[in-house]
Length: 320
Image (tube, rainbow, N blue to C red; front, side, top):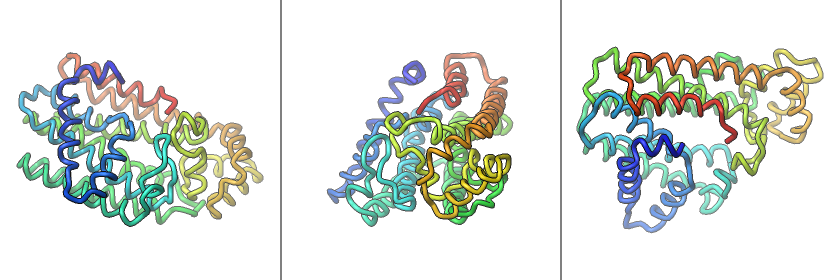
């Protein structure tokens, strides 16, 4: 990630400064919670994608900095809301905002950050960007509700799982890369290809996230191993295990999802490994990685495109 950030170092610093500036509020609790989650040490992949995509498409202005902050604010707001919905206690290796301040302040500060993103969008003043971002946040909300609806349901299909991760994760990656191309006044086919890159990158990223929930360790992941299991989320490794495993393995996972419990985590870890569920999920991530790389093929060869290609590789080859 260091080499990728270095490609847009000055603009990346400007984005971080803008984020700090825009978190200002006369209400102290807003600033406290806002800074707490923004400063938590995330990769900032989504704003970096805005910068890389805009520059790869030849953008010369400065509004990509504001758009990058918008995308990060939307992501941050969803994290605050997600942690409340999921009753999560740990994120990025430290207590969640809701664990520190409670659910109500976390939800309301999430609303503040969402609305700050749209104030920035008004400042950008680009109708196509506004439409893209409005559609994106609407789809994210649908994804959150769909995931909530499917929690505790072991009969969730692989198709529904893909709908959830497309709306919860891939759609914001797509908005970041398509938005950068739109700012650069790229043609519609170029914008579509830019969006396709972001979409497939986001799908690969989330698929690997769901692999790491059963392959990583809590210290490295910065979250509780098996969190999704305890929340009754039927992710692809579990769906595959229920489909391909023995009757005992199927019953084990079905019970865990239905009852939203990670009490048999060790046995389930064994099951998802023995059935090949993690390899199956990882292979799907690799397929999306290939599609992401293919979407970049018509971009001019430059350092920004190189770093976008590198991101696609890193999305799959990571341990956290």
